[in-house]
Length: 339
Image (cartoon, rainbow, N blue to C red; front, side, top):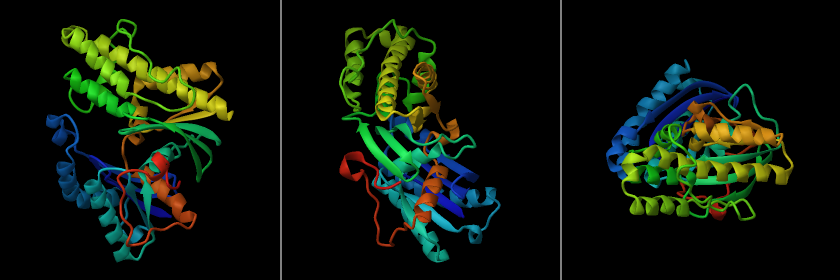
């Protein structure tokens, strides 16, 4: 089954064709970073307009790169939420119209479920059961997956997600947008022990996160030592990243030990962080735990992961009615509606 996937939850317009939930025939992503960079973050209205302009050409390119016409598509999967409503509606309505015109089955996919499926789009797939750390944009959570199609939310952030904290700290330091990649590169040049920040929620039981206080700690440091923003930027980035990475790693390994599994998965935009990948791999190996992560091209928002998740949903008999709508937040306090 060849599934056309469409993703437009935030500031990337993406389309992909995936065969049987595993083989990527094409994956096209149109980024809006340059549009939003002057504002230091995503402007929802601008993002929605850019999606309207890009959706048609991006889908056309995805079909072309897959060597297919519209007639070669068997089903459609599209991000239904969470995300920015205006952005979601562009992709959702396009997918609905495409499927209706071609009389194809179609399904709305949860964006977070898509990220969890991204690690299954490689030749080396992790065995189940496993525990996944999903850190992407405004989401940071731990999930237990006993098998494909089943999940359990173990814990999530109470306030700022890790990705949000990166963007906000980068803005404080004048490093521009997006903040994750630039802080990761800068941290490699600094001394993580030079400026210490408290590890939030590391001393608490359970699997929840909180990064708002860490962001505030960086802000207070800069208020007290404003010159550090210019003279010790690398050390600040290293100290901040060390705190985030240690918390994420500790919670993920603790969750794996609690569930008695030896496989952990790192997915989402923050999964591209080199510092996190290195620290987690070393720490997990010391506990006899294997770490799996998708290639960098599948860490950020993309449509291949949506197509893969959609394939499994359709195979399980799920489709979406034409009167369905998008949603900006997950129901049930962040749980994923279905995998």
